[in-house]
Length: 328
Image 1 (cartoon, rainbow, N blue to C red):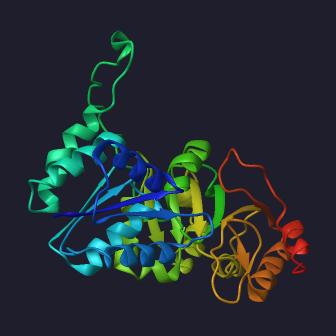
Image 2: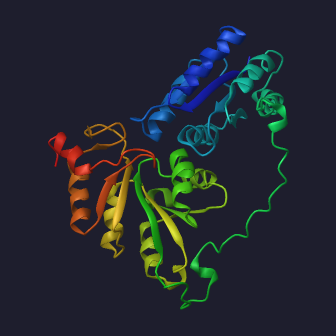
Image 3: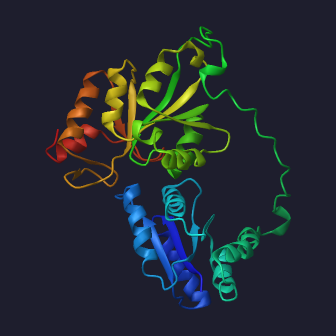
């Protein structure tokens, strides 16, 4: 029988697994894997592997995931690519009709692909409106906007666009880089022309790079670039009409960019994952002594930090949080 992994932000996967059991009865070889605020991508990756290791059939696995482009999906995508199993397949938009349909379909299907094909329509068809007359008609397909040039290379060197200075609409430190909260909530808030993920490590890791590009929100171009490239872009007048969202994996990379001449008046700290040797500051942030030294060096360059996970959250002061842990 095809095995099933339910993967989500928060406890959603656990809750929908329980709901599915109420409707279809207890199920074997079904695991709920949840991403909690204190976890990083590697933690989610390991939890997925641990869940799969409990299945009686590990060759035929269907992943039902909450959100395309979020950390659960990104780590499932990474697993499918790295592990190389022919019948591991993922579908996003997890809802109860999808799960119930999967439970029924896997009783007569030999492969995860076959189950996915059967449940796809049911999961979409489960979206209904009451009163029925208020249900929107099928929207006509909207033509995608013409792509903006991916880099200044398509424009003659020396051309000045706008005022010749790239606009940093939002700069964020986030261990997970581009994930669900950034791709949805922050992109809608900031409305950038493009997202620049700045990391030497990711820029030279084709798997991680492709996963991030796949997580791009509709209509926004995403580029994964090394720190040296950002330094070049910052000085290039061809980017003067660009409104950019900048994502750094850690404060050390941000400091290297500033040492290269890039100046950020304001930076949001969204997430710094916990690991051995780090002190947990709040649900989303953990620091060690080197992190604190780096943050202070950036502050001394004139950069103001604030802590905010999503736009609706209260804004916190990183220095007050560090002081409360005797780290400031």
